[in-house]
Length: 325
Ligand code: KPL
Image (cartoon, rainbow, N blue to C red):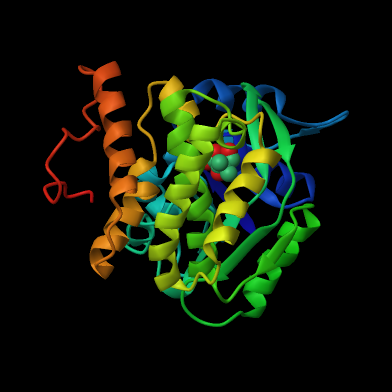
């Protein structure tokens, strides 16, 4: 099976590297980090975990024309880069290709489904953690389950083969019939941790160590839960808050992906995280004022820091005006 990892940053490179280490035919694609691609091209990919390290020879490219047809595309780009990435890799897709998205957030699926039939689309969440240490060097920062399911249709032998491949690569993987529920459960965590750590420039642990942030995170989690319940989530309020706090404790030293984006002056995934909750709440008639406020605060922060260089940041609009919400 030929695998193409699209968006080979930290997590994508980790997945691609582990699959290649297990003998799979993998190529990495990252058009926005040319230094990383060049380092892998000339000296291979280095994966480090605690005292262990592995060196994996794996082809890497920054140009989509260099990609061959893939049986499985692993999509790891940021949520807002999905449409562009799918357009770029469209020529590598055949009617038999599978696309697996383990991206954060909710809402980019419609962009993927413009290019892939729902029957060939796998969506999932992962608790694996990875950090890009330097070009060509990735730290395997956390080990946890990956859960994925088919967007439409039952489990098939072909999907079993993909699951076996991931497991052979030491990526603990489970199949789920309830992928929408899993996406919303993960969304509760991202909605509570990502924007607060990004706004206050704090590591994830601040969500439990600072009493004010802890209270706000709890309020966010409870608000998201009301929308998530309509998508199959069965957690109680206390369980939802506990999940957020457990992840914040376990990843206390981590810099959330949203804070990393803010620090680098890049657009964030806020529209696909808290923004997805605001959109979902509007559809269901559930008020989500705290999540809307977080979306606006992140957008305002970006506008204030990068007034001239942020064409992607939408101007602040009155509620109801924004097409993205
Ligand atoms: O998924 C994450 C992220 O940073 O996007 C968490 C779970 C918050 C870990 O940092």
